[in-house]
Length: 347
Length: 192
Image 1 (cartoon, chains in turn blue, cyan):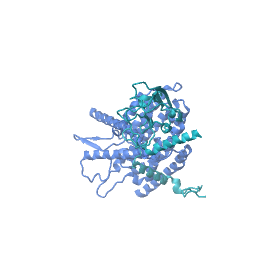
Image 2 (cartoon, rainbow over the protein chains, first blue to last red; image 1 turned 180 degrees about the vertical axis):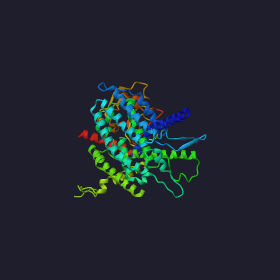
Image 3 (cartoon, chains in turn purple, green; image 1 turned 45 degrees about the vertical axis):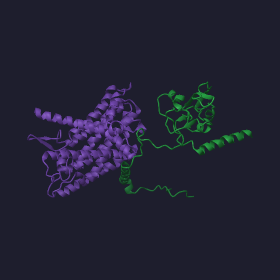
Image 4 (cartoon, chains in turn cyan, purple; image 1 turned 90 degrees about the vertical axis):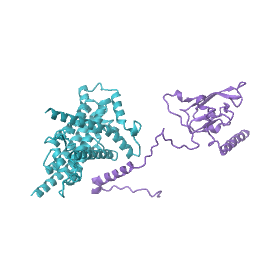
């Protein structure tokens, strides 16, 4: 029992650290990608190629004066960023970061918790995240913050519907909610007996999912809750110092987790093509698989940034039109088509 | 009248289905930005890499000395008069005995100040100077905090004897001739 707890604890600490480091360097990556897409060089002063920039930014956040507005509700004002970052970190527990590693005859899974309602849990936790934004925006007692918070909640609820329904189509196909099993179903296969990634079977579902993931993460072109140009920063207008840092950090962690979920659900998770043909031993294969998963995740993080610096922001009515009039009917149609195809093929 | 071939007729037509999908447009947008990702960057990393200046770039001023190391400026005030930004002030003084090595003529500028915040680097002082004493150079005026440090006195403006500042590129024959003619035309105008 103690060894089990120890192994889980070590795993939790490792995943926690990796999540934070990735989120930290995603801020650096964001600035670099933005500058490269705009023919600039980007941060290059702190350390070689500006590698230490995130540390400098973090230091700046800690050193800044912390302002809590007099008219705000202090308890909720502090609670907001706490919820945002906690929920963002909680979803990482479910992601299967790799296969299993065998040490001394004992098999250790690289997933912290393989619960049978996996994807539902991720959804639940992610939708709690909107409370962080809503509470923070409301507690600031500021018009712009409140507007941003209301936009955030309306947007998240609208897009969660389409996202959920596009996931249901996938779940009907896989027949399980567990993320690990969904990953295993996409494993390479051998001797002409191929398992393809789910994106091959669910291209429309994937498209819907990634569009909704953009909206859920409040990333451009759906960054209405915090649009600097209209709402002076939206829900975090009144925030300063590390509390603002937590909100920004939560956004990048969400992006990381979304990329991980997309890779797991639609792009084979820690599987990579021809993995069973290589004839490698179990542990090497697991490590290679984890590397493959992270390569996929980093690609999607890059994709998030790539889209952000390409597309302009939606107007609010356009956002609602897209969510309710296009994505929701499309996801329902996708669900129906999947259901019909499943019934026809299972006979 | 058609001025160029680039004009486009604006139309208000309904979008086709492919256009309403937006996805093709988004993809073409993404392909444009990714092309820029790999393009050569336009940035010049300033302190390490310096942009090449023109030979007649108008940067920070210098007060020249002559070949013997004596200051050329005679505090005639023509530069201050010419200055459209009124950035130049000076006080004149008479040369004492034994200062012949320091100042070229009997009168010299005991103080000479240029307010770099007022200066617009037009180069009219250089053009007005009859003694070839003041020149603009390709050096940049460094930034600073506070305003007082931008009033440059003789300590910053006069070139040192050891480190002469080369202005031969801007003090060409053509320029000297132009200045001569300007002086002549000035005299002609006066005589009229």
